[in-house]
Length: 297
Ligand SMILES: [Zn+2]
Image (cartoon, rainbow, N blue to C red; front, side):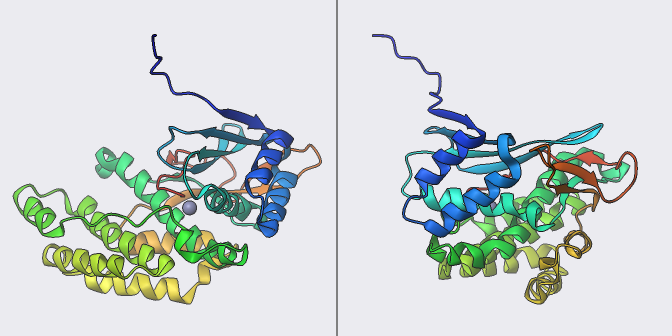
């Protein structure tokens, strides 16, 4: 018998059918089902669910058309076959709800010409930062939906050998412009896993990254302390302050700033309107890819 290697698409649903399927997978979590209803009421037929057993993780995306500016779709890609399907769905629904609460979407990043060779890296870093910031905004809501805080993220980020990375850095030094934010992210990825999931190992890994990274970049300790204080103050949780504060965080991490922001507004047409809030015309810079990058991200 011949077996096909092609991945099997188990479900690809839109609109009300997507909503019904999401709601049935959230059975036993009435508050999360109400969230699913709220999200469906806003995105309506442009909400889609793709569920497959061979996805490496569950992710979400909000797809925009840039010229002319328009909202296209809101999508959840659900990894089936895990023991945390309701948690993963609720996590992505909380991301999708943020634009409904007035949090703008970042559309583009302005990368200076001399750093153009790192543009892809910076765009990925910018998305990573957005994700972490959004997690800070949504974390408490996740618990209020009836889930355990340890299940907010798919699993802790694995320990990496930062001593080896330090030695590799010495031998084959990348430009400081890209290396500094990489060390910031190494520290913060463990720090926030520990913060959200109460995982003590992650806190140790964060310190490890900080110790080795500081040997190359002495400013790293000061920067990560400033970032921690930025998160504690929480001013980014105000939707109107969010773009300015996210850019401030990027500046601390020495990542190019977002140059374009878009608000989604509900409309009678049953599809949200996308409205640029920065420039009147082309936002400038390089467009961000729509999908989130890290697990349950
Ligand atoms: Zn997430």
